Length: 212
Image 1 (cartoon, rainbow, N blue to C red):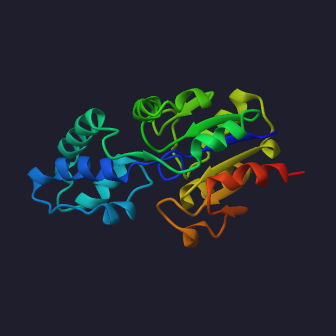
Image 2: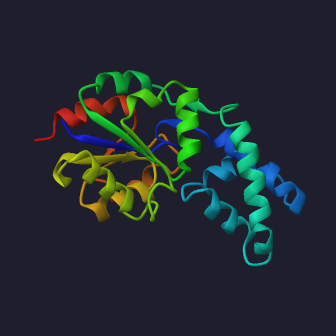
């Protein structure tokens, strides 16, 4: 059985509600209007620092550290208010009990661990890596390469499962199989380069069984 590297947000949990609340809390003192969850859904994926940088732009970049600090403080205290686990996740992880599984997220490691612990998901994964666990976050392949080395796997026996082009790009750069999930934040159009595409995480065990 392969090593499965899972993305977190948009793949295992839907955290857009809490990210939206935290972002609006962080940006309100700077004069931004409230973002809707749908607007935030289109912006996430590269980590909170990049998210805030992109929203502030050059005009308000001097507020970056203030906004980032407010976001992180608020999100830490409200990490699982509106967040939910995607349907089928628990059942699928149980079905994959013979596979070695890890998390590689662009959410910071401590935050990734906290949300997984909140939903009693952490014990399913041998490693939980965040954006600050390795020098280069997705789409860089650094995290994948370090995980594969640490777990003593071959590239050909590993795959990454995620909802965004960043997951697919990271997997391709690392030379491993890539599985895109369409139910997350990006949709099918962003996953065109994936080796495999599934609409429901419950399809993953059967897909893995089909591998040579």
